[in-house]
Amino acid sequence: CLGSETVWRPGTPLTVDMAFNFEGYGTDKTQTYWAGGPDSMPAEARRAYDLCVEVQRAAAASLRPGVVPSRIWRDVLDRVGDTPFAAGFMGLDGNQVPFRLRSDCGRRSLPPQRCSQCPPYRSREYRFSAPEREPYRLPAVRQSLWR
Image (cartoon, rainbow, N blue to C red; front, side, top):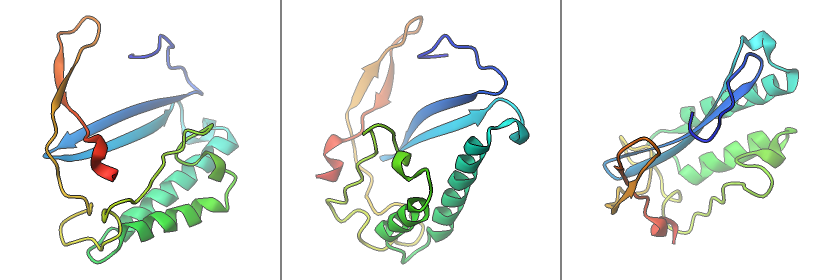
């Protein structure tokens, strides 16, 4: 396990952060897993999980041609805003994801067969290495995407 020597045990969460890039489209995803069945989750964790599923399903149902992505984002914020989890939504302790729609990305309606308004981009490759492994290449995310 990268980043921790902790053994995942029943009754505990496991959080995995991952990224993926395909032909210039990048994604970042954090997924939380629970060791045990749904009945073994504390009530507050289960409520948080249920809210995440509800938000994800509502956002996915909204992704269709003609919809403005920033409207989907506002709907997500409205859905979370009236819950006890609003303060920690998309990050904790001042680490909230700062979504700033500084360009046209997110302000124009979605074209057919696209789930993003931002066009793909080319980026340099950076070399990363991990202990016990040979270096491997990952495409870099262009930092100026949201200028």
